[in-house]
Image (cartoon, rainbow, N blue to C red; front, side, top):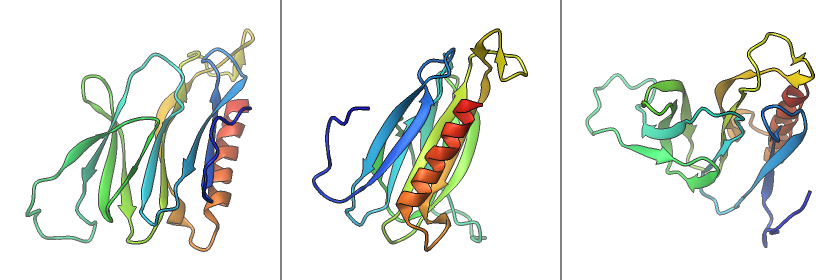
Length: 176
């Protein structure tokens, strides 16, 4: 493990373990240091191992309790993998799409007024098509999925603990 840059201010570090290659059980890590600037932030991480291409879209979404018809046009923008952006408070929808722009998965994202951190993960492994975890010494495949993690989902719990818990869950999945 090697750190190329160290933040100059206090920040939370996100470590995402993933398979080094689809056919190996060894792990590699992607990282992101959240900036504590008071604005809500989302980081998009592509931890998928395989040949399938996907893109992320973020769009405005009306609140769930809003019965009024939308008065404004919905904005839709690309959300690049392995990048971070700041968001304005509001309701959003995140979609993962294939090359033909077919929606593969979608999730809502509610951004509050205060500083919060969000992680959007693309996970999965195309290593194999069998039902066993390891067959002929090679790891089995797992379906491509979209995970949207909101750090404010459990109020009162430190963000660094939640990010560490998410990384631990992913590490356990990789070991299976």
